[in-house]
Length: 450
Image (tube, rainbow, N blue to C red; front, top):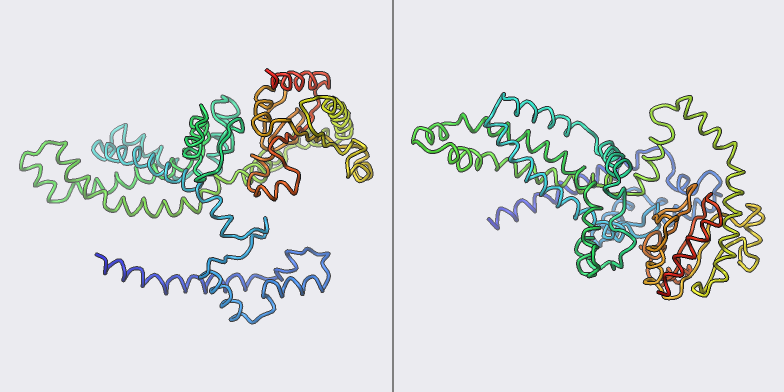
């Protein structure tokens, strides 16, 4: 067995080298200069030449490939064009979340798909069998991103049963220890943290499990029907074995061997394809705006709504800024607040720049709460009118804790350089009445002293 595994692994080396050569060659055949694409049309010749030298694009193709290959062997996959961070570290940061939902989805698919396939095969051409085949075909055919959006719409937006994105509620103090949200929630000892982590996993896990369960159900049904006609099954029946023994001890065992291969292949696909359900940036910044604002084509009604929104944009932004001024002044006089950071205040270091670019201080007010993260979370939990969100910017007032949401991936030193403290709260001031916003803030701040 060991010798067989060694031979298989050695045979994998030339296959991987061939794949690397093909991928490297195809990338080089794409028209255009990567340096120009990265820097944009306004880049100078010196900037383009410097970037080409930095990326070894000025070297011969063989030198580039050798550099690429040696980098891979040393774990150097280069830097991400989006974040500028090393690709390997970006993968390792996201790998636990992907493994968590993928493994859970596989377990659910096995527990659902295999029994359904067995029952469907033993009741071939029955009403149950026809129903399973139709549902399985639908599950296999539906794109993951479309199913994800539909589930978000029904269970998060309409019913409000499940969270729409994220891995755990920002109300909980959960430090990243293993990267697996359920394990980290359990290690934190926070009451309700594990339940919150599980609820955040339901939608993405369901999306991945549906496709695999449908595939497994169809595959197990097909193989079971073939095995049930084999000679050894007829022999088992002739010996007088019970239906249970024939189906589960003889037919199912032989049907599971190819099913295990399918599970392994689909699990590998799932690790690469889970981005469609696990990458909240892709869902929130790309897919959701596409479906929300345009759809397949921009309808006359949507066009009218967008035009009206642009016509009233200046008035609404002005109201946002007025409310933000009022909130910043209110917070400056509270003893629970150690620092208020608002570009509309004259003591802000970028006050003049904000006035020159926007004519006002904007809609974002940041402030530090005395007591650090614990006090900040107690404050957020006490808010009533203002909602908690990972991303800011809406007609209504929203608040977030940057250290555990938008800036969570940064190191403590990097957050300190940006003045992102544990007690910092960022508020996107909405269009509500300013007095109502201040009343909500006052109630939450007063609760800190109790």
